Structure formats: C-alpha cells, structure tokens
Length: 207
Length: 207
DNA sequence: TAGATTGTTAATCGATTAACAATC
DNA sequence: TAGATTGTTAATCGATTAACAATC
Image (cartoon, rainbow over all chains, first blue to last red; front, side, top):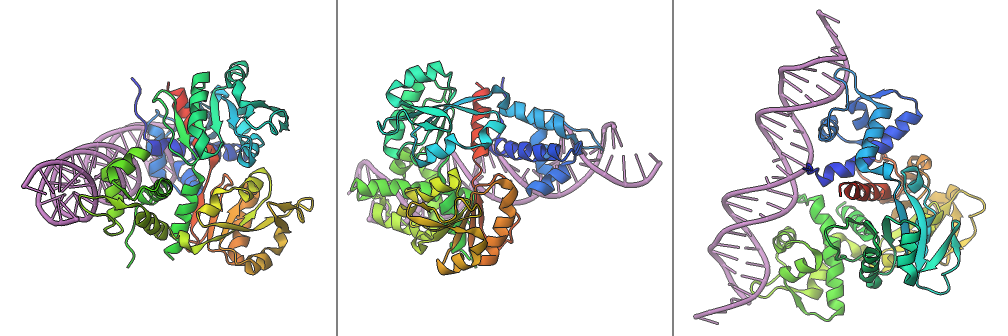
C-alpha cells in the first residue's frame, strides 16, 4: 500500500534537492534543518516534517548528511529513472525547452521533437531533428519516450495529449493554457505561465 | 484595511478568467458555478466560495453574467493596469518569452529586453531591440517598466533582482532556480520549471 | 556532561466540502 | 408555483506550527 504524500510536500522536495546540490558543491558534509530552512525561507519544522514522511534521514544532535539526503530525495522524486522527453510543438517555447540546460542536470533528456508544420519538420534544434507529429507512434517507440511535453497552441493541446497517450507515453507536462482531459493513469502537470503572472499582477495591485 | 485573500484563491482566478473568456467567445451570456466547475475540474462550491470573497457576482437561481464576471475578475487581478515588462537575460527562454503571444491578451506588454552579452546587445527580438543591462536604470525609466522578468542563470539572478529594484520596478517574475532575497515591498513570483517536472517524475515513479 | 538537533505527537490554523436558506 | 442556483454558515479535512522527548 502506498502512503499518500501531500502535493505541498512533493513540491518542496525539488527545492530541498536543489539546495542540497549547491551545498554538496560547497563541500558541506552535514546540514541542519535550520540551515536548509534559512536558505529556502521554509521553517525547519516544516522540513523535518516533510522528510519524516519518507523515513529517518538525519542524526539527532548532528543534522543531515548532505550527499546522502540529496540522493535519497532524488530517488523519492524518481530522478534516477532518467526520463526521456519528447517536445510537441517547436515554436518559441518548445524550442527554448529543447535547449533548456537544467533538465539534464536533473536526469531528464530531450530525445525527440515533433511538429506538424512542414517548414519546421526536418530542421534541427540543439542537435535534434524535428519529426512530423503525424509519425508520433513511431518516434515515441523508437526513442523510448516517457514524457510528452505539450507546447502547441491551446486549441490543439487536447488532441496532442490523446495522440501522446495512444503512442504510449507515461506522463504529460502541459504548457498549453487549457484543462486537458486525460485518464487517471497518466500523470499530468500543468505549467500555466499566465497563473503566476496574473498572481504577480494581483499582488502589485494591492500595494 | 485589506482583506487577506488566500494564495489558493488567487491562483484559481486566472483559470476562471481564462474559461470565462472562452465562454464569451462562444457568446454564452450566463454561466453557472456548476458549468464553470465542470470546465475546470473544480467543485462549484469552491468557485462560489472564491467569488464570494470579493462580493456578490451572481444572481440566485440564474448564474453569473459571463462578460461581467470576466471583467470583474480581470479587475481583481489588476489586469487593467496594462503592466509593462522588461526581460533580463535574452537566452532561449528569455527570447521565447519575448515572443510569447498570450501575454498581450492578458494585458501585459513586453517593452524592453536587456542582456549583458555584447553579441546579443543590439539585436532585435520580436521587433524589440536588446539593450545593455548596464543601462538598466535608463531603460526602466524611459520605458516605464513595471515588472522585471529574470531569465538569467541562477548565479546572476540575485544581482539582477537588486539592480531591477534599484531601477524602480514594482514586481519580479523569476525563472532562475534560486531563492531571491527581495524586500517585502516588491512582490515576487517564482516560476521554477524544475518543480513541476520533478513532481511529474514523482507521480510517474509511483505507478 | 551540556548543547544541538532530530523525529514525532499535540495544538492550531486555514482551506475545502457539505448543507441549506434566500431568491430569481 | 416549482426548479435552479447563489451566497453563507457550519462541519470536516488537511497542512502547518509548536512543543518536547530522544539521542548524538
């Protein structure tokens, strides 16, 4: 039986991971929940609580082993799977993601690019050739794609999602500003840029 | 005295806004919390609760006037301010944002681009010339920039944030994967792509 | 030992859900 | 009027914060 972990906790794990990686680069061997909290503006109690969800990571009176904690959080997040991404829709945003350097350091690789526009098909972005999205099934199988990244216009996103799922991908990262209907077996994360920008506008208006 | 609105509510308002805009395009005059909820996978009770925070928007037994509700939510979010953005760091992501078409439809305009790289300064992206970030004060004043968008590498982000604040911007939209220290008077929204992608990885690993 | 820090239980806080009176 | 749907109060649920025993 799987324990249910709150989304709030899951969303903080990448922050811990990032900070631990920096601490590792600084060759800091041990870190306390206090110091980790200071670096992230998160209370130490919150951090200890989050970590305790997954087991005992630290040593009382001492703190957490930086490298060990980093690795264990990486494993909890599933980063060791080296997920393989296909980006569908090679416009400005899709192209930027194809070049995004921070993916690889987290264990993700962009292995395929797809577009339906004849002018874009066949061109290369960051050394990867753009394929015709009509060949999605083939490409997903050939390249063992795990995750479909949707960067097409909102009007095309649902149909692209369905094609990706039919082709056998295991998760969707959606940048189109629209609610996608996907079966509960396919994890979906929405990255709606207008939400954050609108929230910023709200807070600025309150001043 | 300002009422405190929960971040959860604020983050749902852009979704309501987006859906109402689509309903307006469909020339739907009235919409119920039920229908709005169906389109967004949010319970109608949640929607009514969110809206009730700001006053009475609907008519009992009838529903909500689509256009009116859309406009009122837009006003709550402060979209009528037509905020002016400057993007700092014209790499792949900054360039993609400079071309991002969904901003203008929400009432945001990209009015300035800044970079410190001599090879990029002077070039044009989407019809806007890239300025030297050393000239930040001037550019922010000349172009009446409200919001600074940070798309520089993590190591430069804190210093860019400080320069933007010194130049007088009113809010920061940060894409660099690092915790920025800014005074509480400057609203800050972080758009950390690795959080969403890692959360997706987590959910995929649980299957 | 004394000081530091975790892991965990209990208390609090806040957000969501349920229920329903008001009313169109 | 009967049916529909809001706005709001009460109940529930879940997440955060506080407190502290355990222990390095």
